[in-house]
Image (cartoon, rainbow, N blue to C red):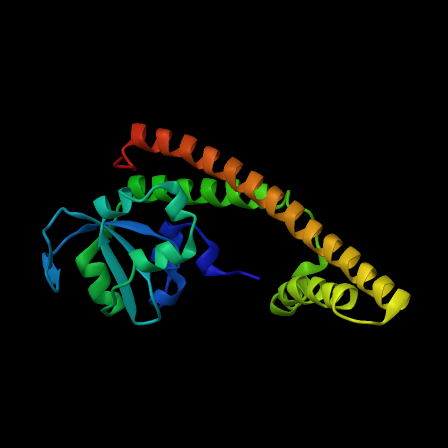
Length: 214
């Protein structure tokens, strides 16, 4: 099924009927000076724009986007904080005020694709686990509840052999649960380190092509 928001930015800008399709970042040249609160834009300035909803866009200076490392650009929450202003406009007014800078847009689009590829490829290496299907709150609560119950049965009850055996079994289960968490945490940290190293290498290339101000 054709999804306009997944197309290249230059195609989105040409075909969009509102701004909801402009989910990617486009770089535009300002054609008419304007201001948003205390931020003033002059003719010829380069700005980064992303659609917020059907009727509003978010605008930041291109240089502000360049200050963000690839590691931050990989984080959706950081991107949302960066593009946190809302500017209501019409499609006709948008095309009157802004002209797509295809060379700079292509650079940013390529960078964002590389970032996604790096993150997706490495996270695919994480071991498949049924933890994703569980209630995490209940799971981690059990990490503390099981050993506590085991200790109570072993040390604080007079249930004899069966109490000791039950407590030992619960402690054994607890050790398995903790072991799974530790191994997954270790693997996750290793993957995150690989991701960080690859994104740092990408930043070095971004410095060379002028898309990262370090």
